[in-house]
Length: 465
Image (spheres, rainbow, N blue to C red):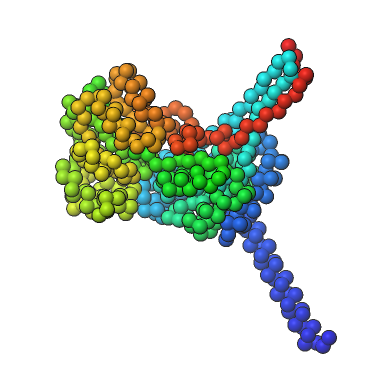
């Protein structure tokens, strides 16, 4: 071997060493951040982490990690809200701060997991809630950061790892959220890649994730398309789909309070939550007074719906996505209308068949439909909810009416005499969630939703009676 050949071999070895060193450094960085170039890497990392997590971390140790996650995210509520609004061009910063706070503070941790025990003459049977493994979680553009925070806490409390699939229009703030959560996990002594995602989420990466045999469960939060895809994945699927929540106001309601509550709920984060009031069914004898109280507050009545139709609807009658989540004043401006100073909600007085009534708009424009009586209101409200079984609300002091509507509408969330957001824990009792599984029946998801029940039986032992 001559000197030239030897130098060439040394050069190749050094180049290979440098590439390996860079690859190792890059891999370590990815592990820390949880963001990968490919879905294959993201799933592999999450699976490896989940095995370690399940084998080595007790419930108490899981709770330590969750406490660290809560603390870390509590320091970034405003930042994430601001970035989510800027990137998605939707919503209101102040309201997204509230949603982030609810996800951090009111999402249940390991306390949600309950062990059942049965003892008797034949021994002892224990039923515990075990993790599924690696979950594919699809997050929406409407609630990107809060959905990731909420699902991360609940799914990790249950002992799982998560591969997130953020919406492309909110990918940067979603990746930041995942990185901050992983940072907290690592600092608390946990695996650094329990939460993963790809750098460039697409429809193809979602499909790849759902089809991978290492993914045991798919949780889809979004529109009907993504929920349908999840339910067709062949995996255990939880679908949190669209809604078109009606709110009934009958003649017994406290109209001033109803007006304020509807404005608060329907304008919350510019109507992006699927739980927000989308249609008002007002008994005709109180409709004018309700409108009066609403317009005295932060709502504005647009008497000519045609002016808004040009902006809110496309030529084919579908919703103009460019208006989704925009401020009411911006929508008025685009329609060539003058907005009042403190405007939060636009109201249009239309008939039941109007597109504003039948389609979920996800913007601070709410139609009011005048109805003959309470029974008609219920009938039309059930029809306009389209069987989503999502959310409905009512303002009434009549117990029979409150009960009747609840039985007829069959929604997952039913709010009485309050803004709709009370149903997800904002000003209402109960835990918070941003994955509301109406189509698949799990309801307001929590840690126990992401577990499977395991039964352990000991015969002729541990019965002390």
